[in-house]
Length: 285
Image (cartoon, rainbow, N blue to C red; front, side, top):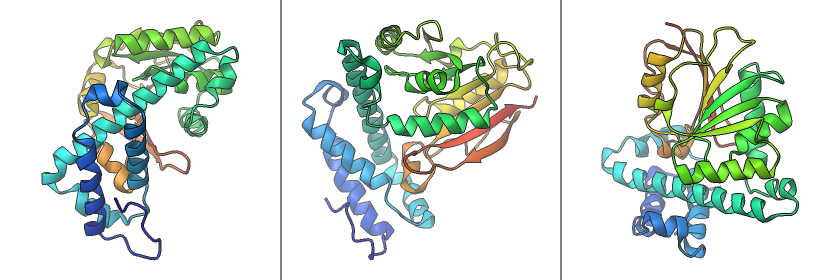
């Protein structure tokens, strides 16, 4: 598989397409259980190849030519499925390492993407105008709620995480207890329909000051349409998306059609090591 290309060679859509299809041939045969629980070597190698592929320095026009090919929809869906599940595996395994560790905070900081979260949370804290003592909600907190841990540890912001998988929600609660954060960070087992607008106070000094939506929380259009119905005017949202180059293949249709009633205030592009663009929204009506 020829993902590592000489930088002096221009990456044409045709060359990149060959790499995409070659990677997909290896990924499509893996079941969800094989990705989550099978031997680590094969999915680990494929994950690294996929990350190399989607972070290649490719012209936006070339990326769009590929991403607009409707016949590739099943391919991109498989690649996105694989990356999402393997990320859950990484978080789950690291969460269990924390639970078994005599130095849980030191173990936490060894998570491969810990530095990414430090920078991403710093961006979101500034964009939402958060201060120590504020409280936020996070949709899609996962088995290792790093975003919420970093928010409290680095910025003094308390939070409520919402995770739809009960096993992952329970694991994250155990991690928070191990780290001594159960009072600062709470987890509920639910999804976007668990959000009914209560607690999203218009007064920024009370209640939940903002809602954050994880990059892997889907389907985003449905989530935003529900939030438009239940959240009060003035509510603020930050939404993580992938939109740089081939990163778009992980959620190609995200925020192309923003539901009427939301206004985009700012869009901050990623800088290494961060992959996510952060979009800041406010409900206007």
